[in-house]
Picture 1 (cartoon, rainbow, N blue to C red):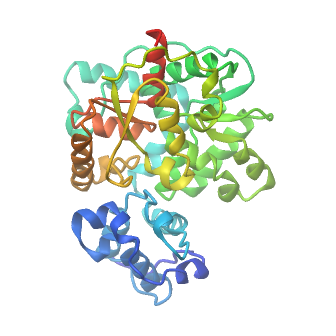
Picture 2 (picture 1 turned 30 degrees about the vertical axis):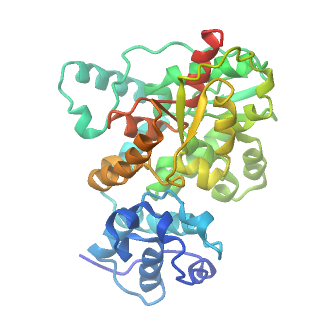
Picture 3 (picture 1 turned 180 degrees about the vertical axis):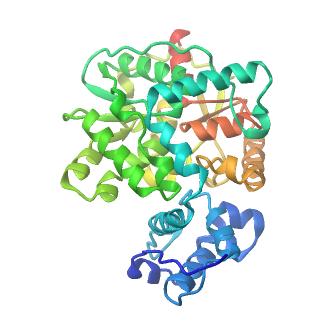
Length: 387
């Protein structure tokens, strides 16, 4: 049943959109559907109807909001600087308060408990091998049964390991750690307090849970050392803790956060010499949305990978691949349609390997048959071959 909901959006933010439409080519859901309700402009118009004109929240409004990938590709394209991501977070928070029975409210709480998450992941890995889980239909990777143990090697930098990535893709963290050490950094690892950055909770509108996870993470990563992040989605929210928590301590914390490629790009000469580059290794760089549009630090990826491989640019202007955190599980048809455009760009590039610095993107693209690696896994393998 529809009813009125207060969205809590800053009126100045809501009024900042002039409906010029320059965002439309950069919105993946509009590109797929061609429908106004699936565009940033259309979503903002719907927000105004609900907040300013007291229109009831109905199925059409929910469909419009829930279909948004929250890629924020519209923000760099907007001449008025509309903070669409902030508006979507406020809207999702209002809707989350309305959806008391939403599975995400309970499911995402697991992410803050490392032992429970790893136990459930191990059980899921067993179920996959017994063919009890339709992994492809659910968009799941093959989860490892065992994980290598990471050990701290110093305190020059922190390596943020997070939740799902640590449970499902710890080998990526291990490769990243080796590359950082090759660049001369001693790497510190966070304790259980920094189990989850809160990104998935925040995007689902669970603001209180996201703030609680943020406070725990800050306490676990005290000091002044840089905090390096190898997941674009995690890095984006860690850099916005100041906005999320609204404290000077959170602002200071966020200033310490860097994407791992951002940190390495100015130190790339410290890495082992490349020797004779393998020109047959052409790597297409897929820019995760939260690295390109939110952090706006995607260019260092090509600089670091380009030391060891031939980098090929995709010609799709950085459009979203459709992963969107949990989006691919919630909106499988839209996610697949968005991904198909990315697959066409990859095919046009002629590259045999795709590099993407976000776990959701790597999983989503790999499920379509793409050979996709984290950029620093490619660097780590090249160093191990003595390139």
